[in-house]
Image (cartoon, rainbow over all chains, first blue to last red; front, top):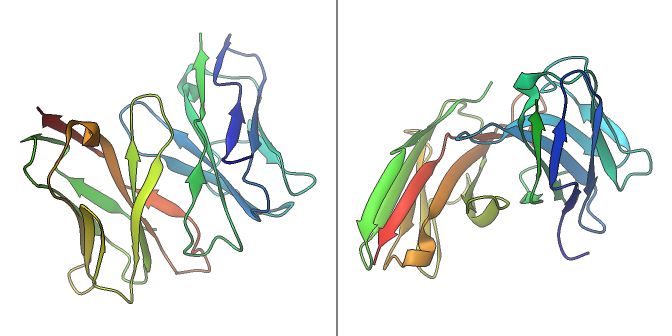
Length: 115
Length: 115
């Protein structure tokens, strides 16, 4: 596609439920990133993939957060046993090459609300 | 890790005036500085970026300057138009510890251009 695509755009879940958020990066982009954006704040780094390898997961808030990119294209961010503090917009970005000092192109995000 | 401070948090200008947003960063090894524009409910959109080997970059009404010694960089928008109204984020990638892909964002500046 022409840009980074994320689904769903909105997700409402009850506390304790598991959720899965999908990211389809720009075709051919090697690097993929997940960010969390709280209301009124800038995005915060969660994790980074180069192809199918997860090279950095230092930003994941807890072991309830898990991300994968098994075939080096589409990625899924999974949150288990959701809590209210997980409510945020989850943004995916992709970049060509290693992503080092290269433009990152963002999707529209998934707005997650935990009740 | 990298820390990015952004000022002001809100900025209101009259149409046709210039707008300046300033950011400082903490990691002297940082070498890539993008600026993003985010309209309400939409994706962060890359509007301009600068690398550490360049002091200034211009693209039509938008320019960015970088002062590596002082560790600050600024966004300049001239001849502002109402459609420039949005939240603007600065960001920096650091090049320390092998982590040169991770973007650290400022908290954002809400720019309002009054007709």
